[in-house]
Length: 84
Image (cartoon, rainbow, N blue to C red; front, side, top):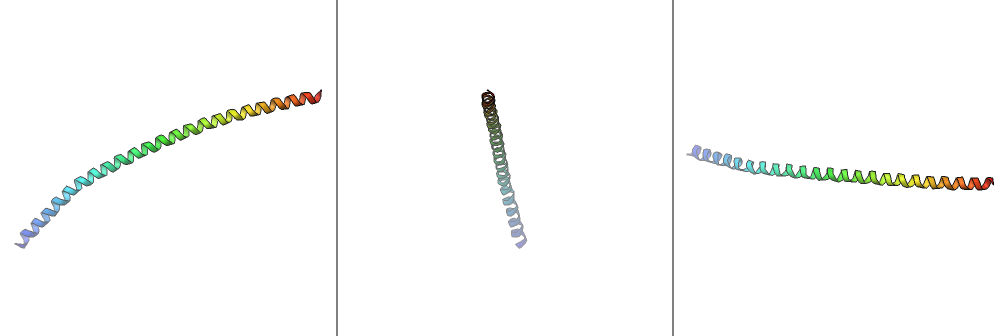
């Protein structure tokens, strides 16, 4: 009698674990999908930040070139005026 009860308890426990593993698989899949979505969002944000940084750098370089050209023109004018 004890063996039958023990066997029934073991069978019930095995069925319980089998039912729980299905939920664990679903949870793992959902976690994986969420992690992939987060990784994609982070990659998109990084690409956007890099694009903005390169645009800002190009604008700064252009402004620096314009400022250097203006300074050179002023220096050329003051040198010409001094020579007269």
